[in-house]
Amino acid sequence: MSRPESKNVFYFPHYTKSTSELDLIEHKYNSEGYKAYYRLQEMVADADYHRLSLATQDEKDMFDLGMNCKQEVVEDVIRILLDRGRIDRELWDKESVIWMQDFVGTLKAAYNNRRKPLPDKNIVTTGNNPISTGSNTEKRKEKKRKEKKSREKDDSLLSFDEYQKQFPDKNVNKSLSKYLDYTDNPSHKGAIGWLTNEKEKKKPQFRKSSTGFYIAYCSKCGDKQMPPNEWQIKEGSTCCRVEYVKEKPLMTV
Image 1 (cartoon, rainbow, N blue to C red):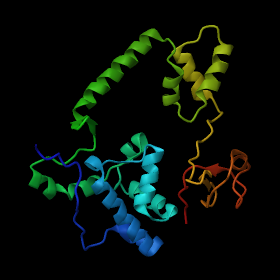
Image 2 (image 1 turned 90 degrees about the vertical axis):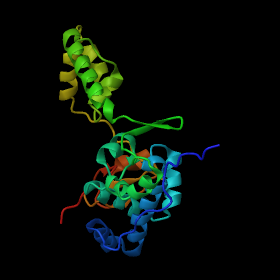
Image 3 (image 1 turned 30 degrees about the vertical axis):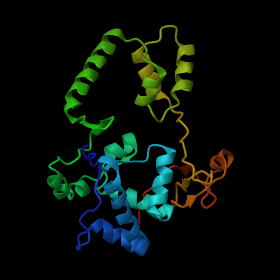
Image 4 (image 1 turned 180 degrees about the vertical axis):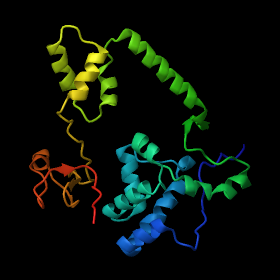
């Protein structure tokens, strides 16, 4: 029986020269930041095909357990690496996957020894078989172009889910219900115009901590707070008495 194919690595190069990202993280969080920076790389190295997924609650819980660092430090390290392009923004926003292209590139020697190609960021798995989706990009684009042309000819309404994808910050169900009550001849073009002009925003979905409290940030000073319920979220921050946001805002000096 042949050995199962390795989907990760058990070691990675630890360079003696620091990076600007690590310098910043150490400056802000000292040894705790240094620990979080390298623990994150260890977890990426250990993840299957080096795609560290945080899409489910179980994955988040295991991630927190593996990192074993203060949550606010880990969150800020991820933010810094995203802002500086060290973590792939597209995969993080679309799939909640941490992919570090530069880091994966340092693992080339290990994969050369196995006579295997480096994992690709677009890889998906079917059973135990990795499949790269990069070659299908043009097919997906062509499919979208055909769908767009078909809609332009038809002008019939799409599903509410499709409109929600196009207007993620709007309460599509509520807004389109008003549109359907307003007009006797609903159309795709009319729905797009209605949603574009809709001023009411969809309520942000705040994450919850392991204790069940919401994780929120003051929109003015960026202070992290843990409101226990939705009523407290509506009341706003206890520090500056302004609305909460779900991500820590970038503060200007």
